Image (tube, rainbow, N blue to C red; front, side, top):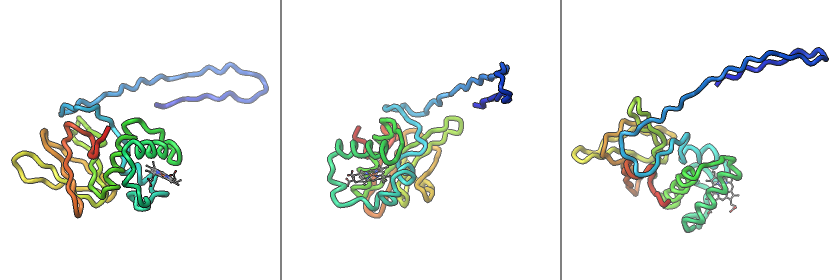
Length: 192
Ligand code: HEC
């Protein structure tokens, strides 16, 4: 939105400056999803993987590499509470509940050394889904008949693809493989 501001010339006298205030109505068009989402979908810019690098990595290392011993043993509620406090406190993020949940899920993946998948957006005009994995994870689309198709992943873990209906996303690292049904969950390691 463009704001026009007018400033009066300082003459010592108070001038009645006619002001033109244009109102521009921005219609936000909510895209309709090709899948029937069981959960509400939230557009995240960025998702937890990139948000962590931007807001948390300066203290906790890239992909949380500086987290200490015992990080993985925290119970879910305690971890979630900690993540929320960190997002609101040192990271100044003002997160939504779903952003806290996604960041907590990402921490469950990190603490177990597992791959992680998060869908972060959907563009209905292009039919493109956007998302993240942990940098270095390999990502595939699995549909019932075909062989898994590799999805190109950028260095920061982000990817985008035209996701066929009824397909699953599979992410792999050196030791583990995880699967996500995008019609059911927006991210893996979901607990909320
Ligand atoms: C300015 C530095 C700083 C930033 C930025 C920061 N943290 Fe922390 N974080 C700390 C410190 C210091 C501790 C340990 C002290 C404590 O337990 O309160 C901690 C502890 C944690 C823990 C508990 C670790 C464990 O061993 O169980 C988690 C989880 C966490 N932070 C997540 C985050 C997340 C997520 C972000 C970004 C949204 C973030 N932090 C940003 C400094 C930071």
